[in-house]
Amino acid sequence: MISKVAIFGTGKKGKYALEILNKCCCVEEIIFIDNFTSSQEVNGIKVYNADEFLKCQKAKKYLYIIGGIYLEDMYYQLLNRDIFIEQIYTIEKFIAKFYHLPQIKINPKSTNSQELVIFDCSTGFVIGGVEHWSYILAHELKERGKKVLFYTNSLEKEPPEEFKNDILYVPLEDDYLDIQINLQRMIDKINSYHKVTFIIAHITSCFNFAVFVKQFLIEKIKIVSVIHSSLPYIVRENILVEKWLDKIVCVNAVVYHFLSEIIPINNKVFYKESPIYLISLKRTYTANIKKAIRIGYAARLEAEHKRSDLICTLLKELEKRNCNYILDIAGDGSCYEMIDIFIKNNNLRKKVNLLGKLEYSKMHDFWNRQDIAINLSETEGCS
Image: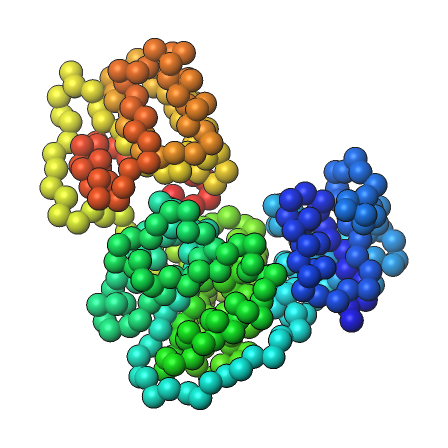
């Protein structure tokens, strides 16, 4: 029985943390704390002002689950109020430590010498950098004789044809609600392999299942987390669960050096710069000043992480400078309509092409006709 838990944050993530606690852990007392709230209760649970509550002596007796999107700020707010780092959790770290593992049947080991690699595609088979990276690496591993599987919570989008039979599907509504069933199914599927490596892209349910499986099959399981982004909260999530990770791979040197100062373990943290290149791309650039310069943008059209909202700012600046340009935009998302309206209102239809989401097979031709590639993200690992 866990005595006292305070969920920091009353938004969507905080409510999700409450739901998981109620279903997966036995807690004597749960409260909410929040910096900005107009409610005294959330789902029948009392809400306290975070700053006022953390001044109280009783605050030292609670464990804290960060249930908000500003993980970094909330983490340091707790530390600055003399809450020990051992008291601070993400929901995934909390479940990994406190969830009472069910009874699982382990079948006799197989003599199968093949190695299995499980990729984390928990967000689904979307067109994104993490997914594309996973497909390329999975293809290379298959070429080397490894078996690959893709863990996912969503089948809304189909996986690439090459991997359509390599799916480990755990419905999002079931990932924690039926842990015993899904954990048994996962162990049954992977226990026949000689070695199993989980490649974690997000510290979410795939990470937790990897931790659970490792406790039953410790001699054959490795967990590798790949930090694809420089977002501080993503780096912080990896630090909070570091004890369960065998290796951490960073996509740039900045994250690597930051982690190396905090995790003083030799040969645990690595990084590999990712070059930007296109196979067999032979092209010439627009040299005639009378011709429009070609600009290409390809990403999810989202303000969060991608900063696609800045496309309108870019267009204003190009127009202000009277530039001769054509901008091709490949992508879809919540900023699409805003950009489309801006293009219409400023009579830019002949200069800006909103192409929507393009298949990977079409991206070679897309880039081949551009002079300049732009990336507006402030935090992506390879921005």
